Image (cartoon, rainbow, N blue to C red):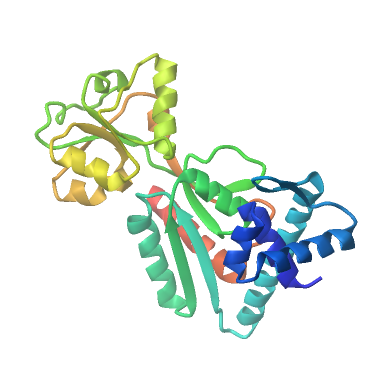
Length: 299
């Protein structure tokens, strides 16, 4: 069977819809449906369960999807390796990252890498941790950066960058001169917190449960820029990592007070990849570059 069929099968599996997949693939839904039926007849198994609201993979379909990902990733790796053999090192690296680590960590790393490898192109999407995990697991992206990656058989953390949370506030805030603060003390303040899509928020909520502290934020937002603005303009306190507020700290617009709660001192960013995948040459070279930068920043 052709790679085109594999790509089309993978897209239906990803979208859960023949119509949505057909729109993305620029084919008609009827043609795509016929192609899937031929594939199932050829394999002698049902790959999808047809439901009123879309397509769901059968157990056989899930096994076949893993095979398809391996084949398509292998094709991309082969092309990249052939380019490397010709000393061209052309290629493309797909990245996904949570907000706060792209502009001050990934962007400089990409610029440095392209100084040496100008023919490598990049795409970078800033999104929620759950979408990054899905993107890496599906092979949609090569490398992901997430806050405190949850243990998984599918994903592997190649480097954990220790970035503990800080209580972040304006320099004139009453707590701005404290040496350290606890979540219990902060719970009495007006708090702005990342929403539940952020790994930072899950860590805060877990510490709250463990300490039996009720934390009711005055503001929840899915944007770190909004949280920084809230604190910078005297709205109250937010909890962010030092990497997320580097520029404001340097400009004296914000201060960051260390936290005394055990969990909140253990935060960090994980650079993760799909555990069973061999990355294409370009992505593998950039991953090595990221690891070197990350390790040097922790020294």
